[in-house]
Amino acid sequence: MSEQITVGVGAGAQYLGVDRVIDLGPLHPSAHGAYRLRLTVTPELVITAAEPLVGHLHRGAEKLFEVRDYRQVLTLANRHDWLSAFCNELAVALAVERMTGMDVPARAQWLRALLCELNRVMAHMVFLTPLSPNAATYREGVQALMEEASGGRIHFMFNRIGGLREDVPAGWTGRVREFLSSVDVSTLEIDFDGLEGLGVLPHEDALAYGVTGPIGRASGVDFDLRRDDPLPAYAQLGFTPVVRTSGDAAARVRCLVDEVTRSVELASACLERLPQGAVNLRLPKAVKAPEGSVYTRVEAPLGTSGVHLSSRGEKTPWRLKLRTPSFNNVQALSALLPGTRVDDLPAVLSSFAVVVGDIDK
Image 1: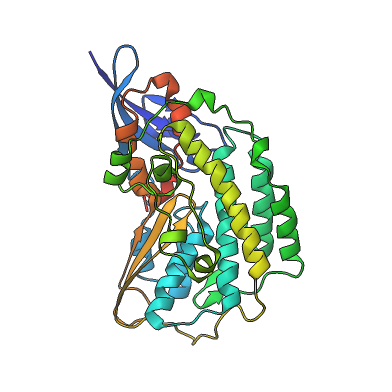
Image 2: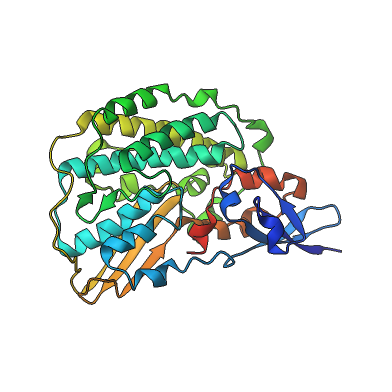
């Protein structure tokens, strides 16, 4: 007879009132907000059904946006996915810029692309650290560069409506070059053999759930906004995303590793083409988006991060709806976990990158 259990994933899961706790390690993002799964298992502890339980870490960001002006909104925009802070800020800034018809300076556009790729390397290395502890060295290196440029270690607050808050410090680009030249993913000590065949997400299910990012591309979803809806800098670089077809845990981790290499290449290209000039526009005291609506999206580390902004011509949004990658991606666990042994659950979940604040936005 099957048994139904509720599993909590993350260092704080014991406080969720769950039957079993699976701790993937203090460096896993779930340590910052444990998530829950309702599992149906056989007496042999093989999962036959899985249901992600969302909502316990509800952030309320979309309602908080409505009572803050557009400058203040950016402060909240980097908090639902704390590993994609810069990319999330950018998605909101782009929405306001497009509604107001702003022409962002070229240097700011190239720096935005560069910082997005550094943000991606940082996020991927956080997810890879439980599988290969030496990934933490790279994570720390890129995080120090992001902190030096923005002043923030986690919540960067470096984007502004119309560009960036300020230019990067003197000598920063040279330190970025030095770091990028030191990244060698072949040094990551990952047991791919132990992940082969585990937690397979079929291509059709990935499409049905709207899975994007490296999880979707590991299942053959050939979609990446850096190529398919590029920002100005990306449009000039040319880009081919990493796509695999097996859809198992090994494919998902390999996508993360290979995307680090692609991000290093893109970041290096941005440095080579980085123009001189201003990095922001002079703005009025109160920024007001005209009446209407717009949808913008960027390729965040975990997938498509979208913003649907509706305005009534005031200095605050009337509505600001987020399309977050983790919310769609986590639903796919109901498709990939059946058939998995409970003993293999930590390995499967360690390959499945989500941030809980991004789910419960």
